[in-house]
Structures are given as C-alpha cells and as structure tokens.
Image (cartoon, rainbow, N blue to C red; front, top):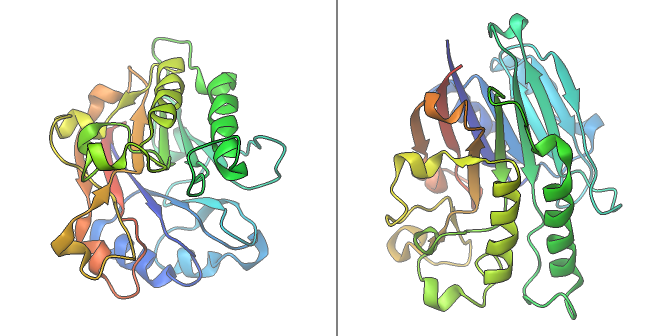
Length: 272
C-alpha cells in the first residue's frame, strides 16, 4: 500500500494553516509532518486540520520558535515525544502506524526540528551553536534512533537545519563558515545518520552532485532569480524501508505561495 509522507517547516502553523490545507488538497499526502509550529498545544488548529482531511494529530508545541506536529489521514498506534539537552523545548515527536492504518507491518515516523544554531559557528562564544551540537550528540546517542532489526521500518524527517553535501548549498566555498554548512555540523549530522544506518532517501532520487534545495532566505529580493538555496529539510529511512521509496518531490513552487514559509514541503511515497 502506498504511503506518502510530507515534511515541512511551516514557520507558524496558525499563520499558515491555509497553506497546509493547500498542500493537502493539491498533493494528498497521507501524513504531514510540520516543524516550527510556534504554538502551544491548546492553540493548535486541530479543527482546521480535521476539516481538510487529517483527523488524527500528534502535537508537541510551545510558544516561540519551536514545535512539531504530525497530521494524518490514518490512525496512530502509538505517539511519543523526546526531550533533549534539558531545555524543555518541543523539537521531536514520533508516531507508529500499524494495522488500523492499513499497514501489515508497523512503521515508525520520527519528526525532528533541530536547533538552527544562531549566526556564529563557535560553541565557545555562541550558546545557540553549542546547543545545536549538544542536541545532535544526544540524538546520536538516543537508542530509539538505532533500529537494530534488519527489517526495521522507520522514517526520520524534518528540518535538520544542516545542509551536508556540497550540492546542498548554492556555494560550498562561501558557506563553509556559515552555520548550517560548517564542517563540524556536517560531521555531527553524519554521525547521527551512521548511528542508525539511515539512508538519505532524497539523494536516492537526485544524485549527490546535483543541486537540491528546500530553503530560500526571506532576505533575498528575488529568491527564485538568485536561487541561493540550501537543503535543510531531510527524509531518511532505515535500510529495509528505503528501497521501497518510489517517488520524491520537493515542492519548490510553494516558496512562491502567498505569505510563504522560507522552507518548502518535501514529499516521499513508500510502498509501505
């Protein structure tokens, strides 16, 4: 049975719930994973999501530049939330889809929003960057991201706030000292990926040497013309699940929607 998962840093779900509805209507994903929802749980627009076809929701929110949510057409078997760095911020939520969702074998979806890290890539002088590195270290050590069974079926998605490959940024040379593409961040993300033997599903569809972006800054006068993007949003899957991915879309046109997020949705369809 095909299962389409979308991931999107929405940059305020209450401000842009109409754009989530647009994504749902045009692309019809089974599951929508959102990051940077910027709202406490009691103010999340659950009724709106149900109206446009997503009655099942797992939310982990708070006021400010945090918050993650998973909206689904299909019911959840389980929901869990994990904290990192004793910060109390809402940056992870996971769900399990099982038989009630039409899957013969359960599938776990982890939705992450890794800290951006501020502007200075030096943990000695920048607390935000130190937090980002510590978050990555804790996530790497977290055993639930180390599926041990050879047939484990898990997906890890979200705004990981790191563009690891040279072709994931508009200029590798110019961005080596810019937070999101520094060697120390790329190395930490590589450790996290290796710890769970996670497969970079997006790069199974687009070769590593080809440019691939999911984020364009608000600061650009004409984001499309300058095309100075970065791939900050990712879809990883366990080795058993990754080969079942049959389609991947980066919805670039969403960056041009009215009052857009600076990120665009990424959708992957698995034969789940």
